[in-house]
Image 1 (cartoon, one colour):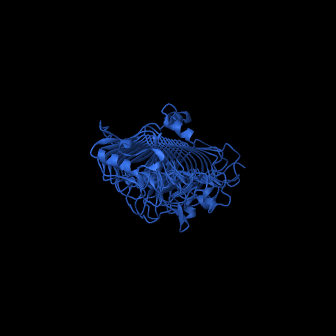
Image 2 (cartoon, rainbow, N blue to C red):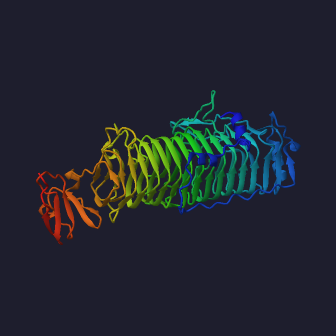
Image 3 (tube, rainbow, N blue to C red):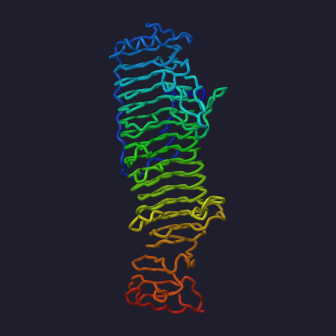
Amino acid sequence: MGDNTMDQAHDPAKRFDRKRFLRIGGIGAAASIVAPAATAHAAPAAPESTLVFNVKDFGARGDGSFDDTPGIAAAVKAAAGGGTVYFPPGDFQVKGEILIQADNIVLRGAGWASRLTQTDTGVAGKAILRFANATGVAVRELSFTGRGTEHVVLDGNRKYNGVAAVRFDKCTNVTVSGCRIARHAGGGIRWTGSLRGALFADNTITGIGIANGSDPGPIGAKDNNNDFAIGQWESSPNDNIVIRGNTISGHCFGIGSGHGNGLVISDNVIHDIPGQHGMYLSAPGGAQISGNVIRKVALNCVNVQIASSVQEDVSSLVVSDNVLYDAAAGVVLNIASEVPKAGFRQPVIVGNSVRAVREYGIAVNRTWNGSIIGNTVSGTGAYGLLLNGFSGTVRDNTVQNTNWNGLYVDLIGDTYSSDNVFTDCAMNTTNATAADRLAFYVNAVKTDPEITPQPVLHSDSDLLHAASPEPSTLRKCLHSSAGTGVFLRGLVNRTSKPWEFKGELLHLDFAYSRTADFSDSAHLFPSTPVHGRGRRELYGLRDPKTAGMAGSFQPGDTCWHARPTAGGTPGWICVAAGEPGEWKAMAPLAV
């Protein structure tokens, strides 16, 4: 991103209207959803004191060559306890860092023409401006330029040893707004320890990942270091942080935060993140991620993880109305392998647009009572919706052009799927591991034997559609594994493939299907009862009594012949209750 682009982003008249973009894209929030929302309050505005301390009055020159560190430090000391430190236009050279341990102080520039430039190396972990144990402080309308040469290779991985622009250590009620931060390999805006109350808004932050020249960048894919444009690495708890309207590129991570409450990340543009994730949140308790545009990311656009350091359930998480593309995955709720029990409770993922991702559109793990509603997922290298340990609602989503399952759900409780449209799914499972389980539009399984009672997938008015020629690898439109129950009503199957049920089919009342092939006796006889319209139906080659079934049946239950022939019976009807009761053959079919 060049200076001209950043200047446009800084100009309110030219700023990209993200909400208008979302409206044009037609991905407004799904209607009538009650969602747990994160509640955050922006940091109270730091007081703009009538006491203004111009750094040039304290010996700083801003001529691009003189060491301005002592003059700036003197102005900060004079403003301690309540005052504004003013930077007129100029290039102020900073060697080391400016440490600020005073409350109610504002550092303000005259716009991006007021620049602080880092001049030295060997100050790893520090910052041009570092606030420690401060309350009610702000940095506004300043420009920061780092050296951009601070990554080194250690143990085969590029490690954090750089300098941030602004850093907060155990601070409260802080603001950074309207700043431009460029080429800081140690991060743009960082904090350590707990941060209580913060507003980071309308900043433009560009790292070294898209730098040219002889620097030891750009950052390599999957490099994992402490280089956040805005954020923290450690898992200290935080409260009431608002990150809004920023434009971010070129850092290892875009935005990151440890656990806490009241985190709001909205209306940011994050792009060209060459190392890791657009957003990385570690077990946030109460977070709202909405209206962001995230693209061209090495890994996931939004990655929320329960790390081993914080083995707690995550609740009140809302991910809504984001535009996500050109990444490994769109939205991922992840759990570290060292976390045996914690998971996500009542997360809401609604109204997002995900496209052109190399792996998953939306992927969640160990999620209870989740809501996946009104999302559009298009063009995935693997799954469209990967719900790996899930119970809850999947409604009004559009999923198309997926290489693997449009919906894969590993049931840990009843799940309600309704009014979803799956188009051109399971397009390419060739050479994939366990390709057989990927070759379905919808795949419902149960992998945890301890889940009881039997979890059920309720499918109501879903549409399975093949707009393009069906791939040769597509096996069935819908599959259920042993140990699951499936309740189908109003399903429209416009593929040429039938179903495959290895679990219990509790109800079958489809609206339309090009095929209703139940002839595969390995899947339907004698252990797959089909319930519907008030009576039990099943398919088999013999009646249940002759087959030796032990289930309880009532008069009127029907067993249809799976392979009827001319002159043979079409099936059997139960005429007396029992286990399995008495059965009589229907009249033979005409020859």
